[in-house]
Image (cartoon, rainbow over all chains, first blue to last red):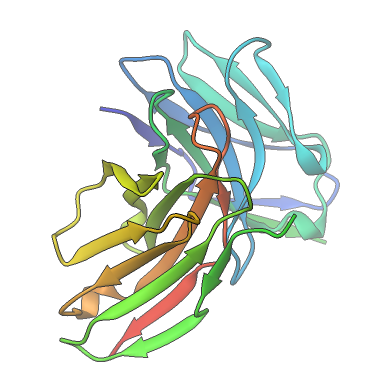
Length: 113
Length: 113
C-alpha cells in the first residue's frame, strides 16, 4: 500500500528566508508525486508534479521539488518566501494506473514579517 | 476554461438526514474524484468515477455513494448522516489518464448538528 509522510506539521519562517517542506513516500510500485497548496476556505491548488524524467521539478510561485528515489523523498523548496505563501501544503502520491491521490497530513507554513 | 464547480458551498444538516453534493468538472475532463477532509483524518479518498462508472473506491461505509452523468457531472450522496460526517468534501477532475493532475474545486462544507 502507498503512504505519504510529511515530517513537519508546522514550519514557521521569516519573510525572504528559504524554506524546505519534507515529504517521504512509501510504495511498492512506481508512483506519480504531487505537491498541492490550500489557502483558507479554498480547495487544493497544484504547485508541481513529478511523473518521470528530470528529478528537479519546478512549479508555480517559485516553488521547486526534488525527487530522490533512493531516499523515497520529494521535498518542496523555495529560496525566498513571501507572506502570501502562508498556507497548508500537502504532498500526495498516485498510482499511475489510478486517479486516486494518497495525501500526507499536511504542513502548515507560517511566514512572519 | 472554468474550473471545478461544487455546489452548495455550505450545508447544515441534522443527524439521520441525507445529503446530495454536486460537482461540475472542467470541460473535457472525464474523471471525477471525491475526497473528505477533516481535522482528525486529513484528506481521504472516497471514490472516483470515469465515464459514468465507479473506477476506484476508498474505505468508507456504504452510506457514502456517488454517481456520474453522461456530461461528466457528478453527485455524491451521504445517507443517515452522523456527527462524524462533518467535513469539507472536495471534488477533483482530470482527463482520466492517471498522468494528468487532478484539479480541485473549493469544496462543500458540511456541518452536522
